[in-house]
Image (cartoon, rainbow, N blue to C red; front, side):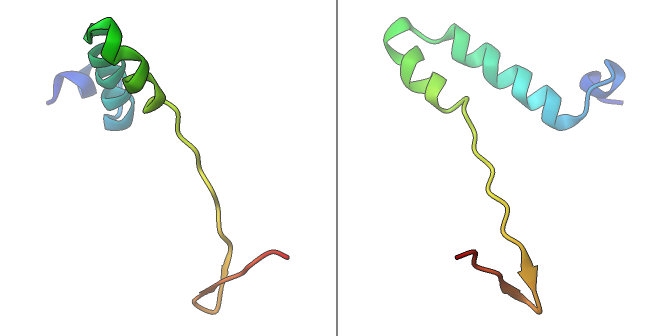
Length: 56
């Protein structure tokens, strides 16, 4: 069994924690650029009959 699974985490949670720790360990001048990667945006597109529905 994986250590992250034994700790009660799923892979996404484990991956997010590891990424944050790596970003914190970076040199100050590189940290700001890496912090921007911490933000994520999700966009949902509804589909019907195999084609995306565009909202107007």
